[in-house]
Length: 223
Image (cartoon, rainbow, N blue to C red; front, side, top):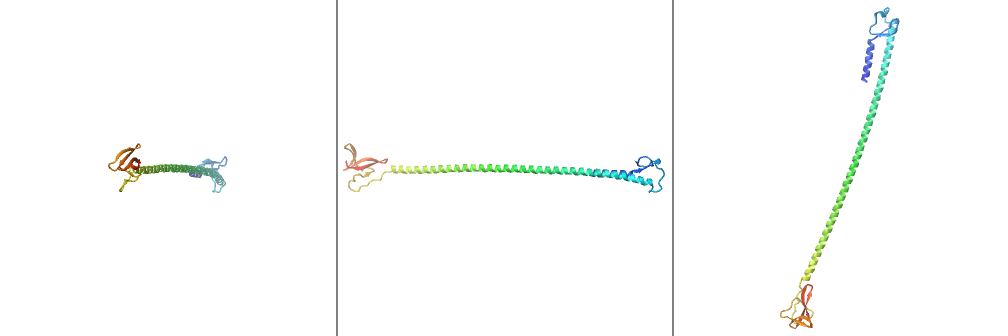
């Protein structure tokens, strides 16, 4: 725009330096100074016919040049405005594309974050399930160990009860009754075979050896 205005100013200044000389005969011509032979008599006043004619011709040419310069300036302004509008449309399109790209990147990042969170949650659930299964297995093993220990203790108590010697039978006065069980024989007993059965005769009482569990005991019998 500044270049156009400068051009118009230069044209106007150049036109001001020129004078329009209209000789009596021949075409109209522009020159800085009129030729001496071109003047046929000097006009008496500025309002003479020849002065008015020169001024009129000069004014018309100047008006034509001004109109042409105005049209050129208007065309230049229109072209500049068109270029500005095109640049504005291009910038707006670029901004729109940039916003679209930014939104797409944001959506892609959000999808990636969502997938990552889902994977992390799945890993956490799998780890929790594994830990729960391991805890259940440990608890089951501990319960089995306790049951095994209890069974072993019970078996040990049973074995100890079987291995324990039966309480001795104390006989107060006289011979013990038939069926009495003693853990040991009184002193002075003699081994005796009666009817093919081995007895231990202790005085007038006969004992027959037998087992009560793993323990050897003696039972009073009548042969």
